[in-house]
Image 1: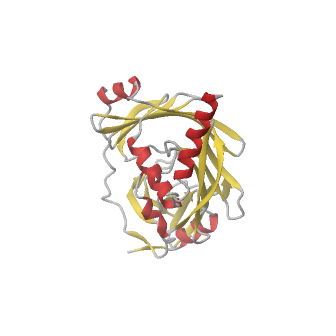
Image 2: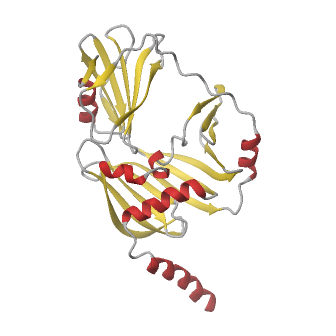
Length: 310
């Protein structure tokens, strides 16, 4: 009985101390935890009825963040981050490295960044509490100020502040995608796998494609909070011709825009929405534009149509 009472007290006292914390404070604590803590998370990603199991490791070695992401189903596919270098390891191609601050395919990069930067586009609201992976969690809603993007909700572990569950929702609260932790282990030191990753000599970062033929495409309209992160020449799958690639993000959602001279490259013709990923094609003057991302289709169409050549 004494042991049970001690366990209950350990759960109640931290919760009482957190009663006055704002939603933004919870998110700031999450951001710091994702950068500083050493942990292992086993997760499942749900998309349109499909379940994808993942394992994510994070630690600090000699002052550098080291992370490892493994996809457990299907052909081997891993990603390793050492500092700001991410290396992708897949079964059907040689490993390659790029410059990136976070690993893609798990929580949004903004979750480990400046939470305040999201306030331009999202309102932070405290939700209820529930138990996830055997741990009490506090839910935070990120509600968009307009209908140009989707909303989100995240449950944070009340002990470590690490995310336990992450949902992407439509305006009428239909679930598009979910990432849920099924086991979370906080570690006292970096696991051996991360120590080996730190010591390993990974492939050098690939050079960005030269933009000698790149054109100065600009957007007459972008949703508030979105900005251009990258421009380069990019090859669509199955295409032998380079197209102009522009990457956009508001910290939560990412959008890819491809531009080519109409008829010069086999850009996709279909218009679809699946798993929250929308895709549209538009003709802009003599150019064909493809935009895709996890935002409403109307947003992609308006972005594509706003392209102008300067």
